[in-house]
Image 1 (cartoon, rainbow, N blue to C red):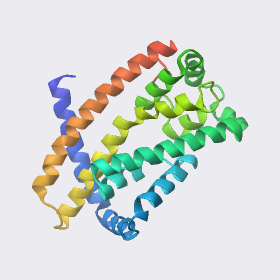
Image 2 (image 1 turned 60 degrees about the vertical axis):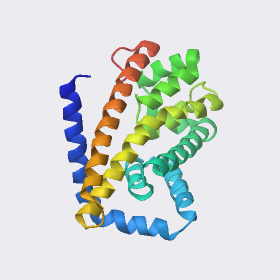
Image 3 (image 1 turned 30 degrees about the horizontal axis):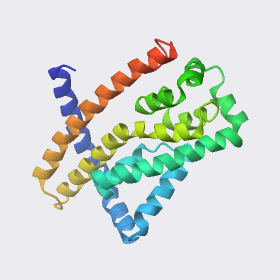
Length: 229
């Protein structure tokens, strides 16, 4: 990755974090206070709500950002990862045993899924891991789609570790946005927000690089040079 591209990514990441901070400023603090007011039950309620949202086809990006603002980077990443694994495993089991027909109709005629299904027949765990790093199908739909393939549930669950880079990036972004919101309200130091924003830029650059490598490997594994996007 060229230095110019890294600089551009860094600038965009900081700008996005500041924009999110302004946008979420009136919502993050009340939501944070509500979750913290639940005490030890706060993370558990968040995990269960997140998992339910995944099963219900609700995009988890907003909740992942909120986790960064509420729990911080380390705890937020662990919380979201656990929630995402629970939700994705539940969706996988629903597709495999209860809603096969509906999922098949949703995926009918998808060349991407056909290529993925063939590749999973050869290297199930590896392909699912690559999909988690760089999904060819949106996350919520991918969970159901994989339930129709021949991948073993244990391999599917183990491959969930591929979600960590993307989860870390979104949680980090949410943490920076939360700090920016607090700073604008006089509740956090601007210097700390800037330092975290620089770290966010570095995290984004690494995640993008990993995603590029994963896409390349996925194209090679599926034999579909133009479909794994």
